[in-house]
Image (cartoon, rainbow, N blue to C red; front, side):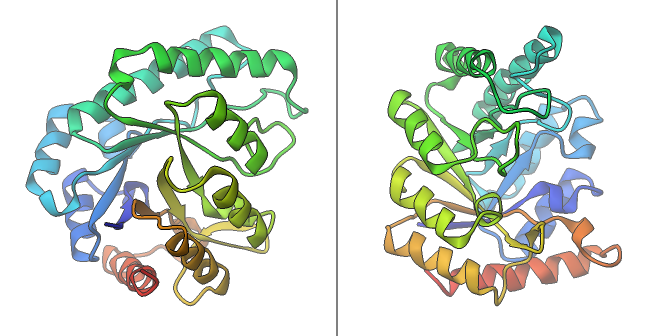
Length: 273
């Protein structure tokens, strides 16, 4: 059955207890917990506190997890940056397991310079995937690599690249970021789904893209309506995670306003399934 979730980062300025409460109030049946949610990240990753929040909100379980990405790059030309990025990815998988999470989403990294990735960059990516595959913590949980927004230094930003990776790594899953694909065209989203299928799709990040902006609300959006219809027709029954960026709004939002926006978007998504 489809889970309708929100990214915890939409409520990034609140304690994690409040974030889980807000997600429930908005009508979510799931949550994607970002390890970098500030209250959690800056408090030293208090796993016990997160487990308590999860236990107190069974209606949002099983949750999914998003590994930290903001300062990290497993394909960095700097070996120290690459090493700590891989370590945090593995640590996130371990935390996701301890949370009873269904899946953990990771970014593939990128070429450090804003140039087309070279063979050496892809070798670093392959080492990252190999470390994940060899980790005992990776067993029993869906490890999902997210498609990136097309950019000159992106490593995994086309449907054919994702298809090739999934064919090569039969244990791996993927997270479909709709806005990243929509930045190319609505047809790009359908190509991801037709090439990669829904059987290995662990999560779908749902948000609109318009005029170069991404992670916008979805209610009433025709492109998103089309994407949801395609997912339904392909039999998708996993997580739909609203990944909204509050900086896209003209003013700071209160928690009540954020809850109202989420509620509208969740109703819109539900109407398609």
